[in-house]
Image (cartoon, rainbow over all chains, first blue to last red; front, side, top):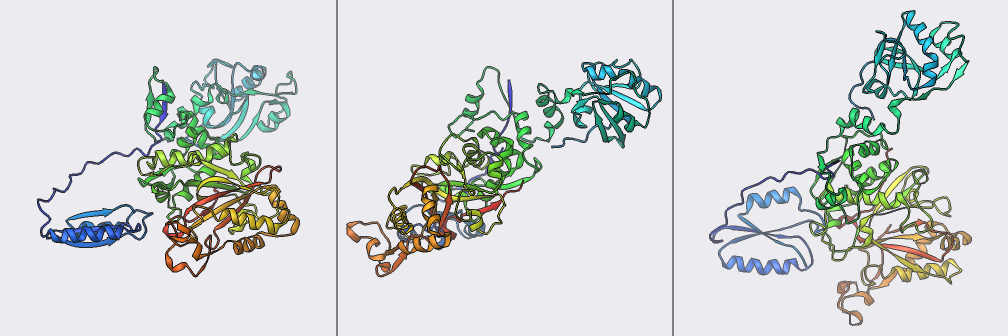
Length: 91
Length: 482
């Protein structure tokens, strides 16, 4: 038998309850996060139109650069001011 | 590396011996003589009744005293104060023993001098076991037992710990040996490793360095590389997440390169040198295992490149006509440094006919224009690994680094009209507003020249970069902490 040392970060997953799926978007605030890849805004403009038609109010956000994770302040702002969020990931 | 607090030695004069040592047997009458004078404790490593079945003989049956007090030779005579033997002599020399004890005419029937034997605590068949027994407790990583019927390598592969190549099992003994390569404590925090942002200790780096195949003396380079990789400027998270084929490219400068046997010459970018091959891999395995950066997870490279297993090489500073990369980046001559560049795989720069620096420089510019795409400008940097024979063109003409970069830069100004989207029937390209501009291929400071390779071959190499600057990744150089 060989005993070896665990080379990983030894993370333990933490289970969290998901936010309940809304019945309708009517009257809710939906955040749209543009990661600033080229033409992501074109996609999100169209999504905003559609959401507005469904009665949602839309807040737009963008990351400073697509190469880094969204800053924690931005994530906090989205989490506290929106009921749902859509992220435009790629070109 | 020290372990838990060592057990104290008895106070006064102490001799550490073993019965299985002819010199110890030889000096047994001297030990009995000193004991009779009431000022000696003997610590026997093997036979508890050697040199006598007496209350002044202690049996070091688990070798705890010998190991903790770093006994290398028997007999060792120590003067112990407060549990530690600061003064010591080894072997048998009548003159030394008389001086050490202040007693004349010791062992007058014995030869004047005999060398000692190896202490059991440094017996090569026992050192690993003793290190684990006495200092294994400093290791905090979870122990994983691989069953007798499992194959070590298959078991580690199944747990997702490998980059696809075999890894060395990180046993406690191997990790303790790896930790001997650094003065930093095993529990010291080195960096927060992306993408999972996990706190990584020196110990976890050592575990991954063992798996990568490193020798302990590579540890300072690996540790410094990890620190550089995990800076906000270098942006390891972005380097993983991008679909471009890039990874951390490591260039080592300074005296440490020769000390640890790195290759800066023939085939420096290829296989065959242990330090080059395993140091870069140790960084990548740490990012994979500790940070969780795996292909198909956060690593989204469309195709990747073979250098992502680990790409690390040294600069040939002694053979260069110019200052080193590290010196050009503001580090003192004689400093050992690691530079991390966000790069793709190396490619050939072919020029066998240029005999003047002007011709070679123009040709370099023509080849470097194609990095990423001839239509992409100012977004990517480059590492130019200049071979000795190409360097000779500049040495002979008296060009220094600054002159070369100035001339090269002049040949790398590009007509915007040729590279706007749609120009010459190609849809890719720069925005239309640059069409009347002259644009540099690389941003200011974006050409990093390193000298290396064998002294035969009119070939150099270039390593193209990833998105540069705040938007992407900034090349980072750090001085190596031993």
